[in-house]
Length: 310
Length: 273
Image (cartoon, rainbow over all chains, first blue to last red; front, side, top):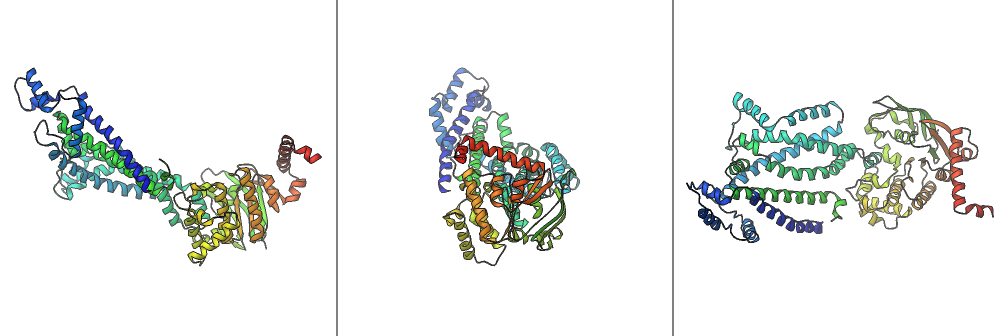
């Protein structure tokens, strides 16, 4: 097991290099010249060729690509992503707090999604075809089909405006979490509980359950064994779900004015603020890779058949 | 009184209403080995599972299944549980799939044993080890530490037999226990079953479509076709002079294959000369 973890972590290094390089050259593909963006942002009235050349030199754009990548990589590892083109502040001073806010939202939502998916998935699998299973699947289908922005608007209208129970927006107290988390959980739990349910069902039909029953093992204990085997599939899915949620809170954050990554990125994309976009993409890509490796390791801990591979 | 009495067992699909086994009756005496033969889909497996009430929920059954005079069909699930494993033990077709893939085989065996007796852990390990040695697993502690995917189908099949030996049930139900094995392992496992009959007094219900194996092991044979028992009788009677055309067809096709096989292997000359 220790060797497996070591191998997986070792395989991360080349992957992260490739990802960071792709992130770095991605901005070079944009039709906008960064020097022009900076000059526009500074409000320079007439942009001349000399001025652009001077700004390019100032930004270090005249140096070879690999040299620039190397410097950027070294700085990025120390969370120094340069300065924002628009505000001139260090990128991390903007991205760091936003990332923390989004992480808070993501972690709270993910915990609810995972707990709800497991509970509903197991209950539905054990009552397959009965009214509980049918009604949970029906309701979740209905809720998952609703677009997040519409569901969010409905909930704000009802809980915040009509009943005046919860704040409409912002991030001031624990109450502020309720609506954004609810919208995210409703959107994802309906998808992920199906993974747990179908995995449980396929395991319940396995011979080992029949043999366990034939050996007189009580149903409750059998269910626990089945759950353990079923969660192996679910763990990989959940492992990827967390970064997906991290990257897809844009809509929810904008509706609830949550001072997170989603709000920051939308502003940055509209302002062509390359350093922030670059840092955002890098952070998210690294999150994907890390969570994927984490779930693989967790999976190997649960599934002895996986440990021998690789 | 017979050990196991099955009367008017009827099995049907609760969803579609299709009758799978219309009306089966048979009995099994102490220490006897009853083979159920028939082609795939003839209801052998359903009948076996019905004895322990192990068919999946959609499959319904009526009729009487009595073990030592106690009608099992009338018991609650809770009352039924001690019968499973301790009084009636099942040996599955595919050993590779019969054990929880995420746990070492030993953990599984000890869990099953701990439910059925007042053994201390060391007594259980000692009992299991002795039983595993007796079925040809020479290193029981190594087998118990392994996960199912690290063992062969034959080894897992023997492990199930070893568990049955420790539990000493009244009836062992073996549902095609040799089908998933290669020829050599098959032979060895059949030998274990033959030895098992000598060792413990359990009666055996042996489901198979391999008539060679059946002839070697069974006292009584029950022939099923499309859910119906078309013939039943002593092994010699069935193989010697079956009355039902389907049985004669089964036996003759077996003989035809056998003579063709001997011919190919040059065995006829040996037999003749």
